[in-house]
Image (cartoon, rainbow over the protein chains, first blue to last red):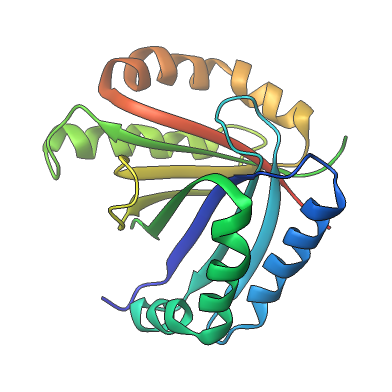
Length: 100
Length: 100
């Protein structure tokens, strides 16, 4: 299926809000935008009390092959192991394809 | 704070997948795009097994005032009461403002 896929992860950190550790994590996260195939990269702050998350990161891939290449890219793997898993307290991913 | 707000709701329906009831719900949902202040309206299908939801609807508002006007618009209120609450099995909303 060659349809653009929107990948998003809602998350909250173990760090205190507005801490240097939070800023460091967000800066490292923003580096993922440079991985080939990543389009429309955005980090956003949750502003509603409707869920347990504090931030969202989202991006688009042209198709599943581009998404797979991102997932296995060494820079992504290193970020997940070195920063995401140790520093993220809770997260939920969602991947969507636009209808119609 | 005059910053664009992205409003999204992840949801799954009580209806069977690909049923006429599902199609009817999605058609009614798409009507929300006509409410003043709604920008970038999109309905998307969840394609990962990473969460319990089947669809996502998302839209942008120029600011909180536009979002508030949408929330209280009669067409939105009627949709929530007449379709969303009776037909949605589970949902999670999130509202975000882009960083930086």
